[in-house]
Image 1 (cartoon, rainbow, N blue to C red):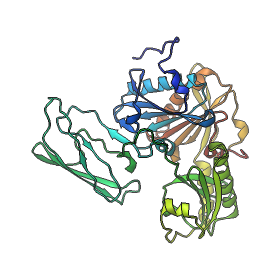
Image 2 (cartoon, helix red, strand yellow; image 1 turned 120 degrees about the vertical axis):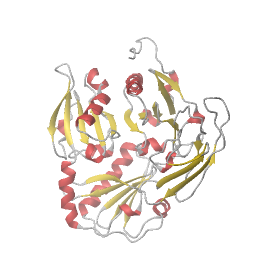
Image 3 (tube, helix red, strand yellow; image 1 turned 30 degrees about the vertical axis):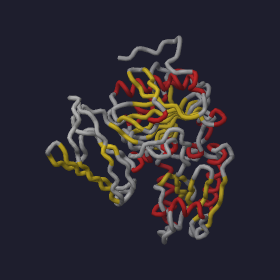
Image 4 (tube, rainbow, N blue to C red; image 1 turned 45 degrees about the horizontal axis):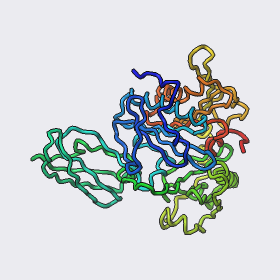
Amino acid sequence: MYSPIPQSGSPFPPTVKLPGLHIWRVEKLKPVPVAPENYGIFFSGDSYLVLHNGPEELSHLHLWIGQQSSRDEQGGCAILAVHLNTLLGERPVQHRESQGNESDLFMSYFPHGLKYQVRTHCPRPLLCFSLSSFLLVVTLQKAQGHSGLEPPPTRFLLACFPSCPVGGGMGCWWEGMGEAHSGWPSGLQEGGVESAFHKTSPGTAPAAIKKLYQVKGKKNIRATERVLSWDSFNTGDCFILDLGQNIFAWCGAKSNILERNKARDLALAIRDSERQGKAHVEIVTDGEEPADMIQVLGPKPSLKEGNPEEDLTADRTNAQAAALYKVSDATGQMNLTKLADSSPFALELLIPDDCFVLDNGLCGKIYIWKGRKANEKERQAALQVAEDFITRMRYAPNTQVEILPQGRESAIFKQFFKDWK
């Protein structure tokens, strides 16, 4: 059982307010700084706090939870996150990241990707490697076993197959200690994405954001994140390709005028609310793709045909995929009251005196909105409310969580509400 953080003093240094990236591994309610040369390396049995302080006091605080992290470690990480968030004046947007299901924003801090490791006492050697799609790239690293003896040489064959939609499928055959095996060796944790096998270099600038959204519907138009590939496109919808400093609103030849207007408005909203108005927005017509799009997506193939009837189906699906709840501790415990079971929601429902849950769990994400006048207990319980909600709704444990202070709403969050400019 953890002891409360003392009121006097802070486990975090004054440097937490400096711009840039700060990472701590959580050990029994103590934040242990990670050296910059180890940024991008995460142990599957641990939990981490990752703070990025951007320009104009725009901060993001991420809780990274390893697949083998204990409940105590996760609880300690949550307590420290509350303390750090308070220390920073509750300005950061908070995110819960699960190993293998990290957000694009989190991945953008590590231009060469992440590397997962497992602490082990097994005498077999550890495997460190880099991986590119369709290539075999194997590097062996010697490691001492628990006996202190140098382990015997081990041979590995790693294959990456293109059939998997995210980063390729993986197979590993390994041989060592006089035995041949198939599967993952002890001491090696399979990563969930291709970039999970690359170590970041210290001092490297964050990679550009790369996101793709599909804009679909007729009356209830919604942008939904898709796999970054031409395979996600069709001629009947609009798509937003967000590359950080450049945002492209691509309009399919058969897309409707409402989708085109929504794509334009959302691209401008991303620019204004997430890039402080400094990104370039370009409207792209089907067949007139600029070189920057081709560089990211590759040569454009023949695209799937759009179906206008799907827009009506999307209207119903978009409306039913989200619900809004009010959080209250008036009875002494946190209770949820459903305010609306379909979107778009009336903006007036978000009251500064309270906190709210926007349930988009069917699409893999839960939002908590914290009104600036909500009481301290409700604000500090936001992450716990989200985790309890995920359990109650039987969503996947790795469902993403985003906690938004009033005034720090993202363009994607705003699209769930009527007339939020």
